[in-house]
Length: 142
Length: 159
Image (cartoon, rainbow over all chains, first blue to last red; front, top):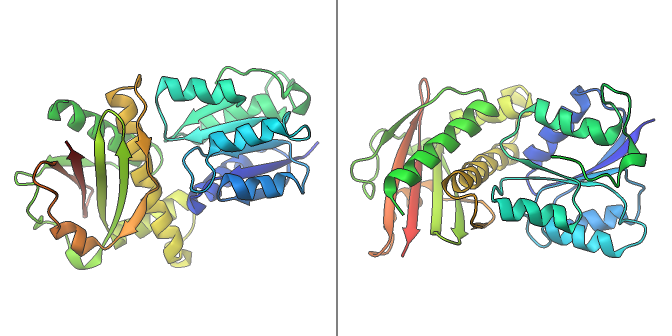
């Protein structure tokens, strides 16, 4: 099964890099969508079916945390798993992301292998053959 | 806050970012008189990005990087030939490098506190190189040496 993935980051190069890492990692992605802030992401989320959102935290207009909060208020969006990829490194901030509903947290700088391993759990490409969108409510150990 | 602790965190962060994501070996040297323009920089072809921050420390970091090195790093980052790279990809990469260096440095310095980072912005390199911070501010500068290029990180801490 192929998935639809939304990448939200105000950095165009970072969106490209994340997208390429997912592509070369062999995940079966049907379509990538991109947004440069939370507001743009919500427009896409309300128009498309998405299986996974990967978002930066620090963005103009609407940051990643505000995006998660907005998604949790929408019945159709609240179960979509969100992974935060950010430079924010404080423990408090990491806990805040998870408490607000993110299923994972990756700190920049990252290696392609880190992204691959963490997305394995969500996109069902893990070695044990388990996982996938049905597991989206699982609180993963990122 | 000790200068030595900040410098250690910043050096480790720069190494992590440039070596982990860009596979670029680097060396450092500190600038003796950080408010003087640095002779070793090729000023005409410099790009500069700035990010402000607040929290336990407030101020800004400004990263100066030669265009040639920025283009090369962008190619490496995006996996594209340098001839195909456009200006917005280069400036976006420079901004992202500074964003990662700053965030990582503060998490190394104190991962129990929250530092609020601003959005990195491109600024005029020559003006930024010669500008003087307010008298009460602390200014540190760090030269980042690669094989044939030199970059500079200016750290301004407001009291």
